[in-house]
Image (cartoon, rainbow, N blue to C red; front, top):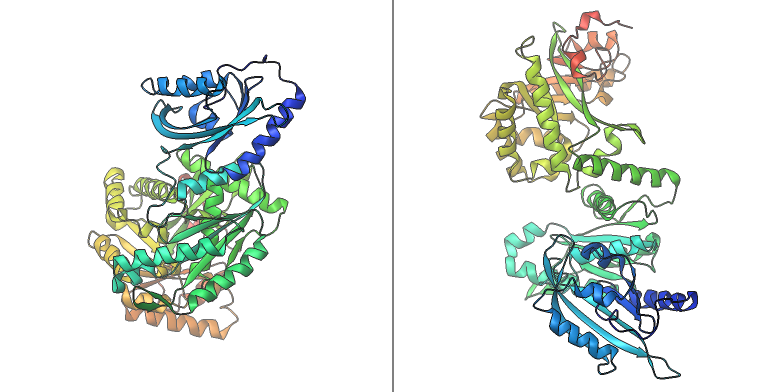
Amino acid sequence: MDGMGNGGSGTNGINAENRAKLDALFEAFSIVAEGTYVYLCDMEYDYSRWSQTAVDYFGLPGPYMFKAGEIWEEHIHPEDREAYHKSIDGIFSGGNEGHDMQYRARALDGQYVVCTCRGVVLNNVVTGVPKYFAGAIRNHGLQGHIDTLTGLRNQYGFFEDLNTHILKNREITVGMIGIGHFTEINEYAGYNFGNLLLQKVSRYLLDFFANRGSVYRLDGTKFGVITSSLTTEEFTELYKEIREHFREVIEIDGQNITLIINGGCMRLNNFQVDDETIYSCLNFAYGESKLEKQGEMVVFFNDITEENRHRMERLQSIRNSVVKNCEGFFLLYQPIVDSASEKLKGAEALLRWRNDEFGLTPPDSFVPLLERDALFPILGEWIMKKAMTDARSMLERYPDFVVNVNLSYSQLEKPDFVDMVKRLLKETGLPPLNLCLEITERCRFLNIGLLKKIILNLRSIGIRFAMDDFGTGFSSVGMLKKLPFDTIKIDRSFVSRIEDDKCERELMEHFTSFAGTFGAKVCVEGIETPGMKEILKKYRVSSFQGYYYAKPIPIDELRHWEPQSLSRS
């Protein structure tokens, strides 16, 4: 670091005792100077220690260096070196007691970033001779670490501090707290009011967590908290106080308002996973609080078990697979047959993932987590393109074959979703009529106007839409009333006992009648026995899907699949 010595008076043979003292002081400085690169030089030996984050960012030889000042000088912009050199010479000649300067330094990628460096000389308390030169460098090139609206450290600062804890194997609790229905607040109160609200919430959280942890402004209306002093149980109890505070009327700019608060947290005790995986898990917990728990705190994997460690490491491996062109992912297809003829009509594309370490992993164990991850649109597009390509290969034998692709609400809320679908149809050559997009009940959390606009836009070119798992959620009927679906898919939970249960048969009568009212056809999932099939043929059901016909199979097998060739049991 700046001051890591150009002219130390001793030899380079620093002994174990002095190195231990250097390490102890370095750790102490690191605690109080997080968010910056800390440096500490034993001036007698010209031996220094740097923050690992600085070593990685600037491509330095390592955290321990002899004559580090000379090494660091090579990274400083040629136009700034003279001032830097003069300052360091003054420190080691005894003329300066420290320095406070700004310069440009070359990062590992060859680009220069602006840095501010502040350092002081620490003298030996007995002899008065300069012993250490210590300080910190703030990197202003990391897209800025301060949120200009709230004054809190921003998302870049959050990740930097999170990585510091990971590198030091330091157990912490990480939390995410956010404001619900903020869009509606902005719409009726105005943009300026929204900014004032964010400032008020940030100030409250900063004061609330004073001496308990650090608060950050994350994306949108979410705030992060990192604390080494609170367990997840203690964090959850404090969160209840925060919710109660904002449930009461607060005054902002002459207007009274109450707020809905959502929150998620987790304990960081597995240091084999990276910051993005941790953030993905935290986002999942926050999303569950917002979408499923009416704002109650959701703790992600609250126990330190081998199963949970394994789960997080698997998630990191899956995220890495997405980055590597979706390596390890593949699609299987479950046939959908015509209820009358039992001939193949189409198939539902089902995602799977497999690698050597974790084996075959079902989607239920990772899709809910990835849905809220920034990487999910990449995977979603891969699924869409692969399913379209495979469906295109089916058309020679089955011209009316329709492939069903499941959508996540996180895909639908992307502004370029419609354009992406149209682009992939053009790239793969699949006619729009041969594509059906399945929307789940969880999509109720989307703006209904936005969802309707997407459906009408894509239906206008021939794409079909199905409501998946109809009847499993409270809002299925409401969605069917407001949105134009071509098909509703009855969940297997409503037909599993239809051979023996009169109530299930009555429900099926209601479901099919209701679908017909809105001009939608009915597909029943979970057909497993001949008896189920025969009973369901009595109702207005257009297609069947289930293990009675076939389990999910590869596309090569589907191309030659014939229902009558399977054994019926």
